[in-house]
Length: 139
Image 1 (cartoon, rainbow, N blue to C red):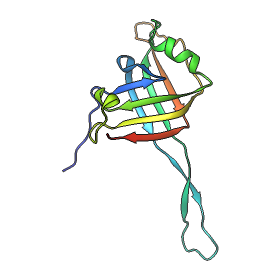
Image 2: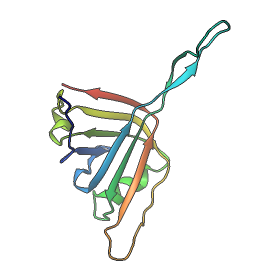
Image 3: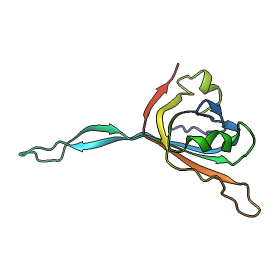
Image 4: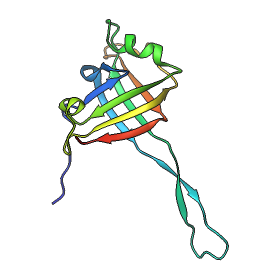
């Protein structure tokens, strides 16, 4: 029987700051680039693993309060940091097989939009952290 996971209350920490209460969407892209190693005489293309090219994208409500979104993100542009993401808040401190914690270490934040406002709407920002090493903890 097929099952699915509904992220009703995921946990998010960026640079050791818990931004779970500001997060509205999150995705992890786990990629290992394919390097072609096909040789003469082969009848089909073959590949081997190359470098990892991981990323985490999050959508956060913009908040200018101390220890919230803007205060936590602005100084990270142009630097590397660590992001932790779990399907549940509890998974950040106690990961398990059903609530693993993914950690992207050495992730680079290229850009940030400090003001993204529209009349009558809550302000949100999209951040993409790229590169770094992705690990998965289940215990």
